[in-house]
Amino acid sequence: MLSYLHAFHAGNFADVHKHIGLLVAIQLLQRKPTAIACFDTHAGSARYDLEGDYARKTKEADAGFQQLWQCRNGLRNPLWRDIWSVIGVKRTDVRIRHYPGSPAWLSSLARSQDRVTAFELHSSESSRLQDWARTHKVKVVAGDGFKGLLAGLPPCEPRLFTLIDPPYEIKEDYPRTAETIQKAWQRCRHGVYLVWYPVLPEAQYQQMISRLQAGPVRKILHSQFVLDTPPPRGMRGSGLLLVNPPWEWAETLDALLNEVINSGAIAAKHKLEWVVPE
Image 1 (cartoon, rainbow, N blue to C red):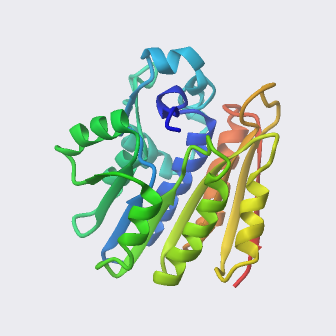
Image 2: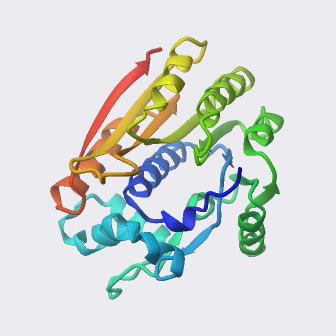
Image 3: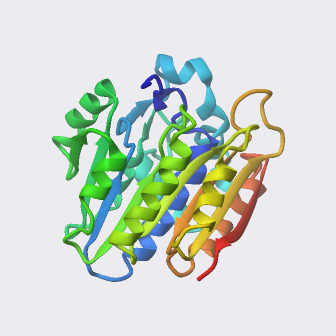
């Protein structure tokens, strides 16, 4: 079942949460000069047209990064300069025209010593991703990202960052994500694993968290960004699980998301908690 296309959702409030969390984690890891192997298990496309048919059909970006851009004068943290730089928006732009997918965020943030590998199973998405990657320092693998990640561990580089964000269009994605984290952790225990999931009325993510809590993986931090007035259907919020969070990740993410909320761009609440301690 491969019907999901992120083009319908690119730049929405969940991308605000996920990609800010990703940027903060990568930049904190890069405080040390040693190389990082970066894996993106469900990469999608690297670039989305926010004025294209898919994006305009849902208009989700209008309540996400587009609205945040309109409220940018209320954002004071210096990290916003890095965020806008990755997105490629200029001060004179009225709106954001193109939005970078996760592999583009990783590519923009990667240093010369870092390595980025992006997996994508969806054939049309994989083809677009490969076209983009020809001019970027990203290795694209057309295939199952869960399997591809495990096959690539442990990496040659001293450190590891992995983004795991399946579409969750089938309920098996939840237990499979938990299982993949546990297997990956056994092969590379010092790796930093960032998992994104949607907060839906069914709350199936709770089963994923319960599986992780019952397993061997330690140090899992949980971040939820939940809308004050969710739509009648669809996502009520966005969740992140971070295994082996870098020092100051929680405080930095919380500060940035509080600026998002206080600017009036997105009416939401942010909650942080340890679901598995050390």
